Length: 411
Image (cartoon, rainbow, N blue to C red):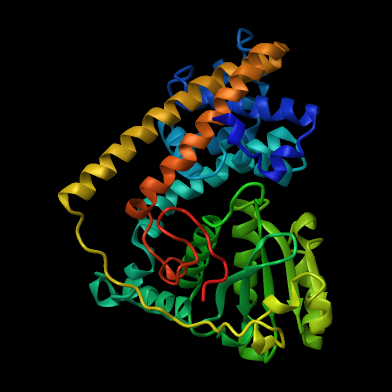
C-alpha cells in the first residue's frame, strides 16, 4: 500500500539531520504519553528528566515554559488532542509544521506544539466549533444567554457576507482564499465572533489540502477599502492565533490594489508577523501583476480576470438525527480509527528508537508500516468526516465532497 503513498512537500524536503529532530520530537511525545510518567506534576517531570535509560535526552523537561505548559494538561488529554488533530493528514506533516515554524529548534517547536494542543482542547475545536458547522450559528435564539446569542448573530453575519471564500488555486497549486476587505465592517462583530468564523474557515480550508500540497494562499482584495474596513484587532487575531496554531499552512499572501494607507502601516503590521510569514506577503497593484501568480483565466471577472464565477451564499440546513444505520457506520469508523491510531503510535514508538539508534534497516521497515497506516488513516477520516464535522459553505457548493474529493472551481 505504501507504494501509493505521496509525501507532503514539507516532509519530502526534510534533510537527514532534520529527520533526527523529527524522530526526537516523536520520542518526546511517546515518552510523555505511553505511561512512563503518571502525571505532569513538577515532581514527576523532574524525576523523569533525570532518567538515562531512555534513548533521548530528557533534560528538556527542566525547561520552565515546557513544564508550565505540561502542567496544564495530562498524558491522556495530550494524546487525545494529538490524535484528534491528525484528521486526513500524514501525522509526520503535523509535526514537521511545528519544527519548521521554529526553525528546527526542537525545544521551541515542542513548546509551540504543546501550547497549540492545549489551545485546541480548551477551545473545544473538534467537539464544539467544528462539530456544529455554520448551522450552529443559524439559530441564535437557541442559545441560553444574550451574549451567546449576540456572538451567534455576528458569526452568522460574517460567514454569510461574502467577505471571504475559497475559489481556485494559484500557479503553485495552493487553494486560494479570497478576502474582499470592503465587505468587512470592523464594528459589525466582536473579537469572539471574528475568531470563531476565522477558525471555522481555516479548519474547513485545511480539509482541501492533498499531498504534496500543505498550504493555502490568500488574496487580500483591497478594492473599495475604507476606514470602516480597517480592523487592526482582526489583523492581530490573524497574525497571532493563526500563525501560532496553524503553522506552515500559508503559501503566499497576495495583497491586491492596496491604498496608500496600507503601505504606510505595513511596517507596523510586520511587527506582529513571524518573519517567515511576512516574507510570503506580495503586494500586487495590477491585474497583470496578479496574473504572474494566478492564471488570468482563473481570476474572478469582478477583478478583471476571465472567470465569470460569482460567490453566492448557500444557507445551512439544520442536521437531522442520525438513523440507526448511520449510527452503526459511525461507530464502525470510530472503532477502525482507534485501532489504526493505536497501531500507528506503536509502530512510531519502535521507529523513532530504531532511527536514533542508527538501525537503518529496521527503521526503514517501520517507516513503510507508518506510511501504510497513514494512508489507512486518511481513508478512514473520510468515512468519519460527515459525522464529526458540521457542514459549511464549501461543502454545500460542492468544493469539498462527502467522499473527500475536491473541486476548487465548481460551476
